[in-house]
Length: 111
Image (cartoon, rainbow, N blue to C red; front, side, top):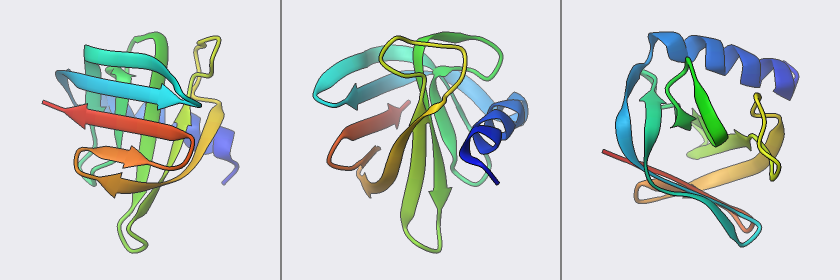
């Protein structure tokens, strides 16, 4: 499935996710876009979004889709100018505690 379609499907699925306010961190290319309380949602399988509860989003938000078999995740975000879609890929992420990270991005979500 093309990444943009996957991103759109993920946001639509977030309507059935458990939404709440938690602590979020979104860092991309050395810049921090989120760091503190924000809306988030978590799917049954562990996929999650930060900066949005699935119905409304702030200027910056990200989604993480976890591949449990591989122990990795793919991430997307709204981009450095913000946006209405998580159209910018963050690449493959690995878990470090409550965060999913790679050489250019860090996406964290805690209650």
